[in-house]
Length: 370
Image (cartoon, rainbow, N blue to C red; front, side, top):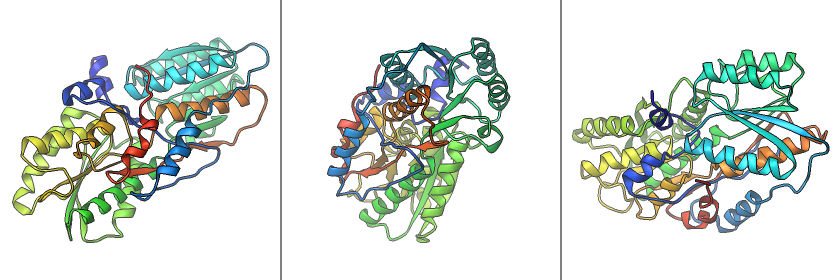
């Protein structure tokens, strides 16, 4: 698989540049964060104050400097847009605090990431920050790091217990909250569109990953409270926009003679864009308020996803941001390097937003590095 194809097929909410170019759109996405596990879900018309608070929180990079010469290895993914933005911001923040940073990128190749773990361990850094390509494959590397006495910090996605026991601490996204937000957005959107009942499809990332499992489980748990809305298909599209558009086209066509699809969840913004692209090609409205509209939501805000909300094609989204997540992580890492014990799990807060209030999140969604 080429680097471009791999970037197009992976998670973490990163919108591919190719997707942006295909749809001729720009803009962005973000989230809030803090220590300890926490989630929040905003109502769709009353979050201006909350959004401003999140924006302020997102800018709060610690001014703390590390004592002594500290070095950190970042074992991570590239060139996925989300990963790239995360890495750039994390590295910038750590270097500003006086930390030496070496980045080893694997482009979602677990075997190469394993080699990079060995390389990092051999250098005996003060910490290894891991953006795991695979929750199972990373376990031996984490075990070796612990045996060598090197602290490890897991970022973005939770690990299974087999790997988590070797991690010093972790700073992760709340994927369950993102799944719940997507379901809330669809229910609210379908109600607003006048759908007293409806069929719902899920176009997901790789279903073998915990990111996807957590989002799907939370989505299903919420939407089951509204039996008038039935999930009729959950399709694994491997984080690929082209496949997402193809599968969405098939599903929209299949159910057209059965009353159509009233709600669609694209797990990453570029997957939601694929659904919208398929709907456009089939002359199906996705603008809530128009006749027979199919309501579409994402579950993380990216530049392209935010831009799809401006013309009303995307009904809802949520605030996951690589900038905020990496700022939360860098603050915790700097504190740790200065001898301050961190909670084992630090989970970024998430908020949802819809057409009713998306403008309030513009400042959160506009500062990704290229």
